[in-house]
Length: 369
Length: 270
Image (spheres, one colour):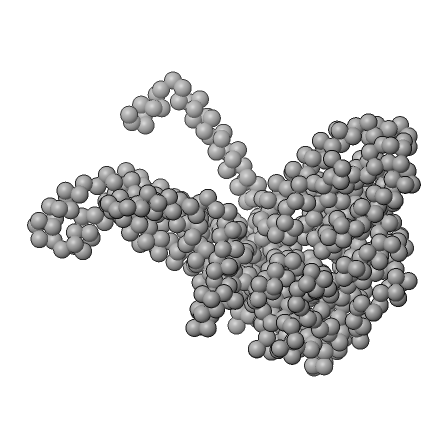
């Protein structure tokens, strides 16, 4: 097998619905990983004896979330394989698995032995830290462990027939809204945090800054939501099938859809959140498989200007400042761009917005009345 | 051969052991693990999980839609069985094969089919929505999906009993002056009733647990279109497995109660 990929790669990404299928896919991957580990026994032994020699075949298992699937498969992995071959003479085979970010984190925690985890949000990496699988300081890298950025935007129908301009328009009775459910999609937490944070900062042009107004806005938007899909991709598919007037989504999702020739407009709210996506070496498994050098090189590779440029071509904002300046024209400016740290950091946001009975639950409970 | 005679047989103890082990490993053990997880945070936490407004609302939605589907299936399944057993017409074999088809289709695909047919942008779905009855992403979509995935249950439960029924009794009743309705309610229905009820209860239990088609065809909005299995899934995904297990236990208790009811019913009429 030349450019190998796990069976999960062949499955439709977030369309994998139901845990059974996920388990099956994961089990198949683990079996495959074990089989290829056995097949590559020579290089594994060489690993423990000393540095693997040129000509050896190395295997890297990548556990990622679904959004960057295309750019990894089409651009980054081939480029890395080429670079590594030139540098060391070794061939790197990849086993890729793509799941929703939270599901992927759980899969790795439960024994899917990924050497590198590329996930949607920091709490999912934290899951692996808490499980004792990531033992080194993964934030020590150049960009604090982050490899890409994006912003939360509002996708609208071509020509913006409902004249949606900002978060407050999503409360209008004539606007039907789509967003994935933050209970099932970690990525959807960005959506909720974006509009909640905008009101918290008093940047929506409606009412006062502060938590009560933010929760009220959240409740008014949730009231207009027609379909809460399981994940970001499913939500986009529902929207593309013609349901809804507006979709809360990520800028890169819209840009990718446009790149694929789909007619889609979007508006960037006056105030929205900066999405930051992390990637990290899963120390426990990388060491176990004897591929720490490859895994670390791959994560570092993600931050290079070459790969940052590739990410930007797939609609993701680069973390590298020079590339960022070069491609700035591709991305709409945001008047009031805030980060998760401005909202107190992930632990606080998860606790006050998404924990049982907290802001999101209270906001959706208003639907009961 | 009576049960006692079987029990006295030589290999029966070993056989019973094998069956007990089989069921124990396959059913009892996983359920025990679930129950353990559900109560692992204590009874107060358990009560908190199952009385949480979103969970209660989802449970209620699941129970009423499933009950409705059980009733509709009870009526339509009996009618279908009647046509299949008593009808003599071309295409009966095809009709019978059609009945089993829903079991062969992944429920996820069922959901996709229904959205393709009844989504708000389709001719049918658009027309229904314009008349105030949205189907996909609303309660009618949930009910259609449940009807589809449970279709064979009542039909296949009633069919063998109906086949055993002697048409001569019906003819006798009609000869004695009973109308067709009276013949049906007095002669045909009573022996069929246990099978109909058993099939309807199975329908209910199956509907309560349905996930694959619902997650696609329903809007899954809390307090609007969220059902219990999807709500449970959300709890798992958002890192609250104890809450998920607790609500699952409620569904399980309902299924268990129904299973006992079915057994009692069958026992009485065996």
